[in-house]
Each structure stands twice: as structure tokens, then as C-alpha cells.
Picture 1 (spheres, helix red, strand yellow):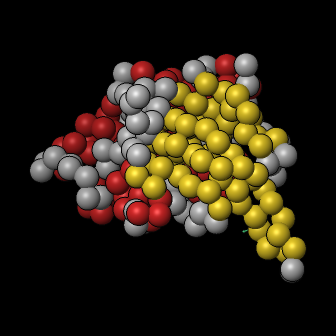
Picture 2 (cartoon, rainbow, N blue to C red):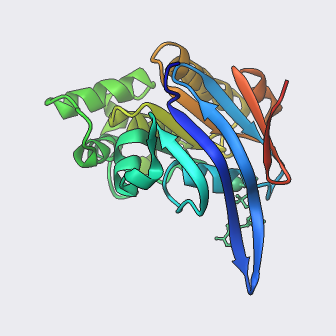
Picture 3 (tube, rainbow, N blue to C red):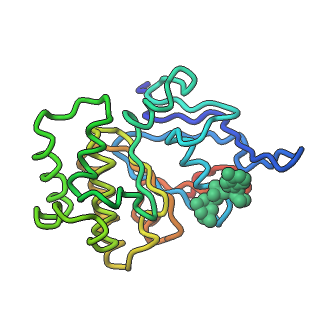
Length: 226
Ligand SMILES: Nc1ncnc2c1ncn2[C@@H]1O[C@H](COP(=O)(O)OP(=O)(O)OP(=O)(O)O)[C@@H](O)[C@H]1O
Ligand SMILES: [Mg+2]
């Protein structure tokens, strides 16, 4: 059997409340493959961001295990997971505000240990152009771009490091309906044409309708929505 890109085994997570452990995730089991577009739905406070933070190694696994390409998180350096396995896209873009779009993408290429082409600047320009940002916009400070444009920069940045997995937490939370459609098309293309594993947390049932697999987080459990 082929190794899943990400395997989640009995993952539980709690936040400490005085002496009390308040569990947000309870024995979650699921797996994610390349070439597929997943969405995760769940009420506010159901633990979606917590789950994504664990997948992206932004938070430490307490109980259970996450495997990346068959390797347990226990045997991997969290920095290496962040730099080499996963690219994150956030609702608020989290771009570096004093840099241009091009520079934001190039910074990510500097820190990864994955193979990136020698000619980084051209690759970054091409990537931005692919997402609808020509040179005139690529050379602009990101704060001078619209919200939708900034989100495209953040997707380009997530991809620049040549990672297999794109993790997006409510990526269209701050954009209008048309821009949301365009961004969803980008995620679909990343999965179906570029063989990425794309996992998107959303409140939007319209985005979920476009996904190959819909997962639901409810009372700490993850279930397939069929
Ligand atoms: N660092 C933290 N310390 C304590 N509790 C936390 C922490 N982060 C999240 N929580 C709590 O854990 C629960 C799950 O939070 P999480 O942010 O994962 O939910 P979410 O599904 O992403 O919600 P939303 O849809 O509103 O973004 C919430 O009750 C939240 O208050
Ligand atoms: Mg959240």
C-alpha cells in the first residue's frame, strides 16, 4: 500500500485549564493524500485551527502521532516539518508587511531545505504571475495590494518551497465571493494539476462542495462527511 502523505493516528489534544485538561481533539484518525483537495468543516471552537497547527508543527503533539510520508513527527524536527513538508495559508495572510510580494516569496525559498531552482527570483516572478500578479504588482509592498492579491501572494509563498502539503485556515475569510471562487479554483488546480495535498478549513459549504473529501470536526471527533 502506498504511504499516505499525512497519517493522523489517535491524535488527542487538550488545553490546560487550572488542574483540568479540556480536550479539544479526541483520538482523531484520518489520512491525507497528494492530488486531493480536502476541506474540514466544524463549528467555531470545534478545534479546526488546533488541528491545523498540529499538522503544520506550529504546536506540539501531546497524544497520538502524525506521520509525514511515513515518518513519525517524533523522529522529525518541527522546524523541518514547517520548512520542508507543509506550507501554511492564513486568513490574515501573515505576510511580511515591509517587503514586496516578490520578497515575501523569496524569503520562503531561502529557508527551506527542499530543492529550489537556482534562479529564485525568476521562479518567484513566474509563480506570482501564475497567480495573477504581474511584475508591477510583484514589486509592490504587500500592504499596497488588495486582500485577494495578498492571499495569492501567501499561496505563492506556501508553494515556493516545493512542499507537498498546503494547509489553509479559512483562507477566504476576508475576501468577497468572486475572489473566494478564484481562490478555490487555485486550490483545486494545486491538488488536481500539481499533485499537492490541499487541506482547507472553512465555514463555507460552497467551498466544501468543491472538495474531493469533506471532513467534519464535532465534539473532538473527526468524521468523513458523506
Ligand atoms: N492556546 C490556547 N489556550 C487555551 N485554549 C485554547 C487555545 N487555543 C484554542 N483554545 C480553545 O480551544 C478550542 C478550539 O479552538 P480552535 O481555535 O482550534 O477552534 P476553531 O475550530 O478553529 O474555531 P474558529 O472556527 O472560531 O476559528 C476553543 O474553545 C478555544 O478557546
Ligand atoms: Mg480557527
